[in-house]
Image (cartoon, rainbow, N blue to C red; front, side):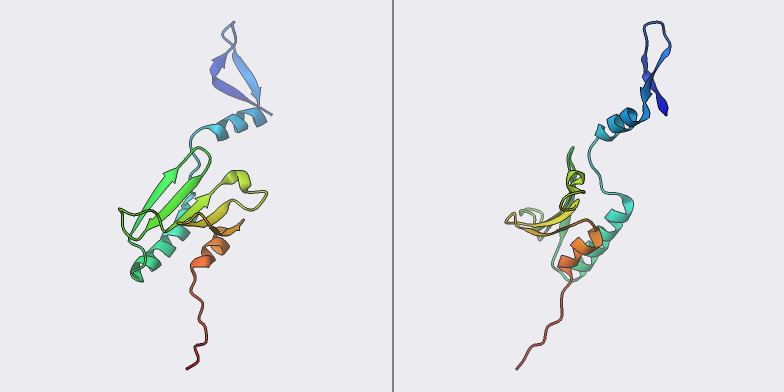
Length: 129
């Protein structure tokens, strides 16, 4: 299959045909990496729970050319407590999603966002008196 390139024209004014896989590859290179709607829904649901627990108070979203980063803060003037990172280049290796602590330690990495965000779930433990 081929797709017509809208801006490319041959010297005689006719359109140049580009193989479809090349056109898709070129389209993927355009623009920054972003969180999809369902990913952002999961992250914001977690953020809401943590704000209600009075642990987080602010956030920032960065869409960079190679990754998307959701940073959470205790106060806006501080460094981020955690960063939730989506790096599509690691999707086939360690997984596209990771949670990074303020120290740079990767707390959890994986292919599924739900599992990676599980690092923030509080586990109940038995406390003996």
